[in-house]
Length: 434
Image 1 (cartoon, one colour):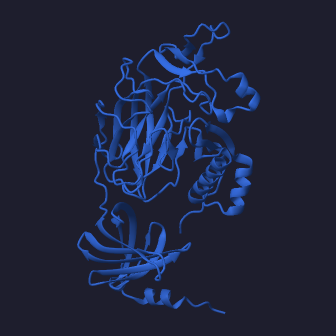
Image 2 (tube, helix red, strand yellow):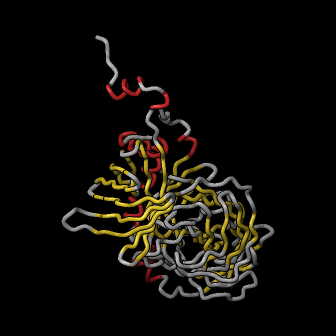
Image 3 (cartoon, rainbow, N blue to C red):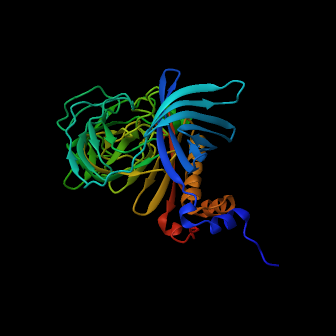
């Protein structure tokens, strides 16, 4: 029996070229008043004709109309009901977004601007000498520098105690950060890629201690090490890239361990309606992740939460073992060179790392078992999005390819890294878009 084309396809095929429906795609950045607190949202619109609009609001699919500049679209997904009701005036929207069911809605006024295509620019290198440092990942701190995607920043950081390259205290301790850096064109719903080009030590000493963090101790070891509260100075040989303790220990007098400079902290600011976390904390924004593979040659992927992303980094470590068992690493000042790229339209829910040989998904939580789950979910989302693996394929692949590392147990959150070798990913067949 001869198969007939669906009616809508047949109709479209018979239309003259000039009568074919035209779809326009627009992306809007919403700034909403959420009980006098600012929140940012992303709205994508597909205008199919003069009265038919589809789109997404922070991932929730919406349908509706845009008639004579009056936009009204709504939808429900995963229990989230959203209504956008606004008037358009050229490149601006003004209206309300309603959350929740009709019986008890939450209505927030908003303004929105049309996101324009990024202009093509020639990459530049910015020499930046910090004169101020911050101890919170706040969206309210004034950006110290505006850069374009693809630009490089060459700057310095103080150590976790606030001391600079001359070991002079510049600010109170607690992982003071250099930044924030504003990335032009970065909007909520995007991802920034921070390529760590160079990390250079700027002095010949680092500070640490002989403590062992509580989460690493059983009762017996806790008793044996109960008097461990001494600060330890380490000597750094920058020519041979080794470290040795400056203590009078007989057993450790010949210890000479290879250095591996890394950034303990790298983050974007949380939203302005959220209480800014201290720079000793970690979460979906990055922060004090203390993962020793955030080092030269690695790329860190972070979600854009605010316009401009507002990138911070600091807390240089000359060397750190897994878990940061002392509660400190070899804390020192650092000369840092990073290049920042922008991935538009892709949002990572939690920080991810790429090295020359591996993809790494991170998870941080108050308990290691929860961090383990978060890292697994982070990698599963990455594989499902980039490699289109279905649930069965995810289970099969992770079961043979996953490598786990404990990154951090010293702070409020513990961390787990799930690593996948790129060589295995090269054997996956990614479906091609039609």
